[in-house]
Image (cartoon, rainbow, N blue to C red; front, side):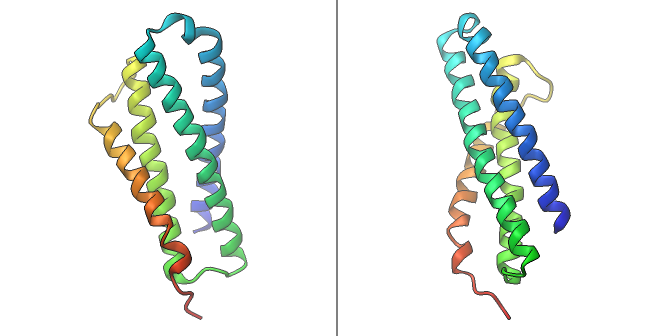
Length: 137
């Protein structure tokens, strides 16, 4: 599981860098060179990336610390790991699909954006279960 926390934290670094870079590009270039609908999709998808990256960062740090201190039960541990993977996959499906459509990137498949969004919603809903699972000692 330690590899999951490390990978998740590394991906958060990538997300953060992408948010800062895209925010600069939005402010200095895209606001003048995109039509309103495209610009709106770019801004909202970048905001989703920023917010989800912070959530994933907190969950990754929590998972790493709770694992180290043996504070999570097996069910909690596996649910948290599953949620983290779901958050990452949902984020990639949603944000990459929107950006791929806007910038004509490879592997564009329009139907992945709603799948990614639904996956993120399910992960947030699944997070509600985490504190209610019992720790088996």
